[in-house]
Structures are given as C-alpha cells and as structure tokens.
Length: 149
Image 1 (cartoon, rainbow, N blue to C red):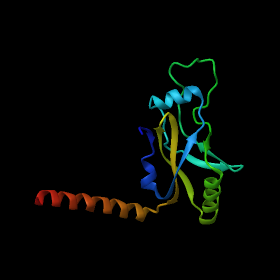
Image 2: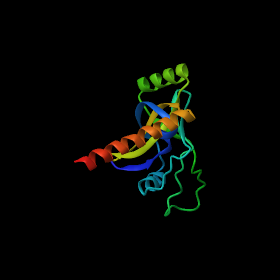
Image 3: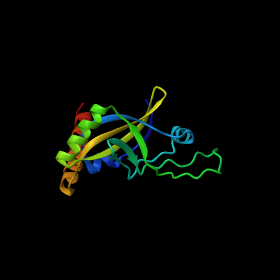
Image 4: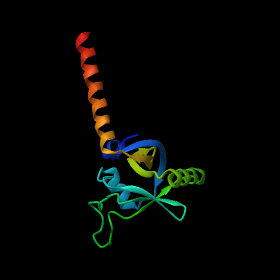
C-alpha cells in the first residue's frame, strides 16, 4: 500500500478515536492526478449528507494531459463508499458525542484508491503542548538508551 496523500496536521490538531476505510468515487483524470501524487488533504474534512459520506475540500488539480475544454472544480465534494452499518455507527457516534470526521491519508490498496479517515476530538492548546512534551521525552529516552549501550 503506497500513500498518495497524508494529512500530517490531523494527529497534531485532533485526538483520533476510531479509524475507518472508505473507497473514493473519482473521475478518470482525478485518478491519474492522484496516482501522480498531486492530491492534498490539507483543510479537508468528511461530511455526511442524506445518509451518504463525502470528502469535502480535498484538492485534486486537473491532470496535466487532460483536455482543457472541460470545466473542473478541483475542490469538489467526492462521495465515499462505506457499508450502511459503518455509516450508521459513524452517524450515531458523531451526533451523540459531538465529534468530527478527519481524513488521514489516501492510499492504493490493490488497484483501488482508498481513504482512511478517523472519528476525532479536537485538541485544546494545552493538549498539544502535552503531546509535544511526551514526544520530546521519548526522543531523549531513546537517545540515552542508545548512548548507554
């Protein structure tokens, strides 16, 4: 599985609770552009409308060798393919607990393009500082153990 796009801010800004995998409905030139590595998840999110999930605000620019005669919106909403049972559980958890759905990465699985997203809770500023301090302490411990041996 090769990663095509990664949302690095997701782990910093949110506490990720449950992860889900969904298929993406893309146009032909969007598939080519994504496989070429020209996709960005920065500022994107997953929304639910009419019991269907959509990836909103993800940037997939027009493929370089596509005809210029088409009108194309690079940040359009793209449908996600999920099982009904998964969708119902996501809707239930999201509405009860006030959580959000954050895309984490887009990758290739077999010949399909998949999106990994998570049910997430936003971090406060002090939570972010704590996670940075924990990460730095792990690095210091690792260095000390390496130097000791």
